[in-house]
Amino acid sequence: MRTALTIAGSDSGGGAGIQADLKSFASVGVHGTSVITCVTAQNTRSVDSIFPIPAAEIRKQLRAVLGDFNVRAAKTGMLYSAEIVRVVAGELRGTTFPLVVDPVMVATVGASLEQDDFADALVDRLLGRAALVTPNRLEAERLSGIRITNVESMERAARTIHRLGPKAVLVKGGHMQGPLVDVFYDGRRIQRLRGRRIAKRLHGAGCTLAASTAAYLALGRPLGEAIESARRKVAAGFRESYRAGRGVEIINSHALPE
Figure 1: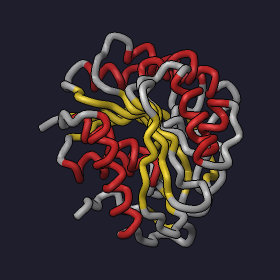
Figure 2: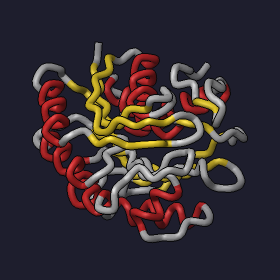
Figure 3: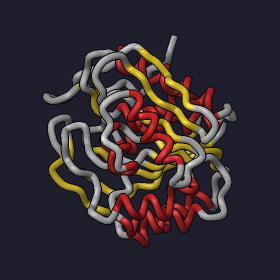
């Protein structure tokens, strides 16, 4: 049994964050370990509060996992503050497994999931450790400083973000208009990864994509193959989404492509 690690916030509504990550790991057949960075009071309609876990406790969680498990891949989600980024980056120093960074900044329901000092710390401390960073349009604009309006500007943003240090960048097109296109750049070539757009506004899609990619990496798949498998898994999750609360639907993180 291969092991993957998620370092992210807890979603009390069960649709995103640690909960979506662990469901994604399990559905792929990977044992999931977790480090909780924040506890949120949220549901499918709103994020009502965010309680950051003290940095010392985050450090202890990381040391407990890394000191016992043979982690084959990891992903980060909601890190929230520069202090948490510094702790995570420090504890991951010296590890060699692939790391997927989902630069979570805003929730689907519109709430901010970061403090003002977060983005700079992410760039300075963690992106250089990433095998892959997976920003959506808004996050890619923040990281690159480029206004994204079409696929060409997604490509420019991907190149700019790559210069910040990650080995590869996947700019997600879910928040764009028109046909679904994600842009992948690994420093050598740009790829436009096309998919079928499903007209739903879902909770947890970004978490599921990053966690599924990490799970497939933990199984030993090459990065490109892991991304394609994860994208197919997310598409299946969209098709099989469900309504559990009174707000947006929740992606089915257990879903697997046919």
